[in-house]
Length: 532
Image (cartoon, rainbow, N blue to C red; front, side, top):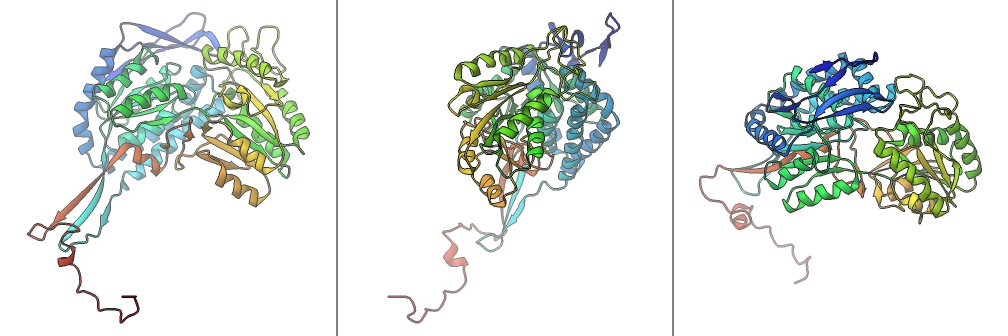
């Protein structure tokens, strides 16, 4: 890791490098990652990987696979134990770097680093539990077994909104299972990737087992890594990002008869029934809608409210949203910070016109924060940061684009329904199916909602956001292809099942065919109980 000084008293710039076959490589071309809270702050300079860089990383990973996969999994897991301790020791400095580079408020950044710690600790123990089964044979002197086997070279492509938590969800179980990884981190967080990779090296991960190639998506490292599936150099892809890109990756993997792990977008519903604890529901809706400035795949998109309590929810939501503190992510008191990048901000600004044209009513007309127009309590630099105030649409209908389309930013819709049936229909009214939530005191309504909702994750009296290292994470429909991150369930994504039969009979035995000779004596007749 290298750093270079900047003028103007700003912190040092981190110079990230590609990691290929255990070697650190600079790039012929580089790009700058500037802090979204201060565009004058060049946080990281990283290489723009070429197609040749990516191919070499995959080839070197392939060469490292045999030796890494041959190490017993409890020994591989020891690396995870050391990684967990290193992350714990550097948690505060790492969290502050996450906040600086991608704009996540510091307390959320700490939570993101803690997710990586939890994941490493969980999978360290799973190194002793990569269980197969012993299966009884239908033939004598024969034993049957099943084993988990690693897949090979895994291509991992991650997004910038959770720049350490999500990569840990993928890389940790993949390596524990005996695979090797070529990681293309987000170009919004190359410095976080550099620091995370350095910790892996310090934890004792052998050279070449984890390679890193920096760069963008289309026409850059992300696209090149996907191409390596067709080249036969990638055997598994795990991707977190947009549904549009996920479809392209799915097509490439499909024609190669591979099953990718696709964790995509969401338009997540949060239902508030008439009997709900409204104060708790509004608090949960605020967090779900505006945490990380709405830049989570699990952020709430539609707040679906029973008409009997909608006036109260509307008033309280608007009142509380106006009080949200926006600003510098290193400020411990902020509720949310800046947009991660200018692309997300531009899309969010355009969404306003879409909602208005459809007939939605603006309760809060969220806008980019400009110098001289800062909201109360604002603590950032409006001239240099990518900040925006909350936007709330009212009178939104399921047929409107703002109801159906994901918008990555501090936006949420209010949707009126009459009772549980309409609420469930509205909650299932988009092609997405990632997360969901319902606020109610009615146990029967809780049961119906969790049975009938088509989302992969459901919360009862909690927000649409949040994950734990030992619980499956993932969605259905446009939100993913049914694969899951986290917990023991993710091991199915990074292993293939092998069936083994060991025949000790000393002669050829044919399953099913030889059953008559191998089975017990024929049972006596049932004495006329059965007809005929």
